[in-house]
Each structure stands twice: as structure tokens, then as C-alpha cells.
Image (tube, one colour):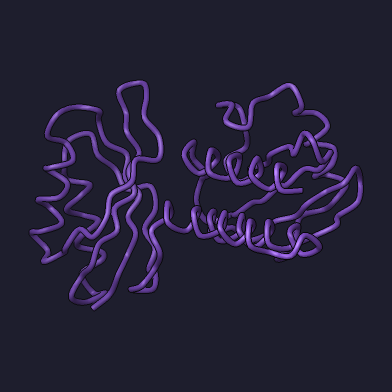
Length: 204
């Protein structure tokens, strides 16, 4: 038995999700969860958590989903069978922030963002200084230059790079940023990070 997360683009029309679910069932897959990551311009980006009897069926599953008119697989990855639902993960990270020692909250924020986003790295910045981190972040000069040049953008602006997310903690004067390289970051994920940052800002 293997658990996978399939990220799919599909037309925003009645029955499209049902057709995809039917194809998953055709290869003996069981849909465990569905999350809408982005919606607009007559398109929907969904993440489907699927259980399969064997990982040899993954290639066939992709073929079956791609065969649905207007549907394409953006990304597919194997996860632990007990992977926490992203919404529950965000709530758990918020609870951890609220319960943590004030002196440890920046590290807890970094860990929370990394887990919620399944990111490669996360940092908290005060001005030009990294004051908390998880993972190996990119060149700090590049990161600071990007953040300085993007202050006029919303954290969910369509022109944002697909591998980077950030949020400003207004009251604290801090910035949290994170990134991953294996798949694009979409609106719902950016909103989770923004809300987690707002909670941290209020607690700090």
C-alpha cells in the first residue's frame, strides 16, 4: 500500500472532479482527501490524497488522469500514510506558536511554516539579519534584494515566483520567507503562511 498526493489542473466545470475520481478508482485507488489550492480563469488546481495498492500503479494512474479531457497532472509525490491534512497541520502549527515559550516563538514559526508548506527552507529576518532558520536558504543578498523589490506586491500576487513565499510581521518589524523547488506554491498555501505570520505577529 502506498499513499500519494496528486496535484491536478482541471476545468472548472461540473463533473470534472468526478471523472478524475472515476479514473483513480479504475486503477484501484482510493481518494482519501481533496484540497482546492487555486481557482479562477475557468481552471481549478486540486490536490488529491490517494491510496494505491502498489506503487507500480502510479504511472498508470497518471495516464488515466491525463486521459480526462482538459485535465493534466502537475505533480505527484509519495507521502507517509499518516500525513496530516494541510489544514490540520496549519492549526497544529498555530497551537504550537500559542503554547511555545516567547523566546522560542521565532524558531517555532520557522518550523511551522516549513511543515505547512512542506518547504525546503524557512527563515525569519529582522532587517538584513537572519534570526531564525530551518534548512538551507538561498543567497541572502538575493533574498534581501527580492524582498526589498517586492514590497509593493501582495503575498498572493500572480506575478510572484512560484518557488518563494513570504509574509511581513507588521507589528514586530520581521519578515518570514520560505521556499521549495519541487513544485509550485499556490494561493491557498500562501494564505496559510500569511495567516500563520499574522498569528505570530500578534503573539510576539
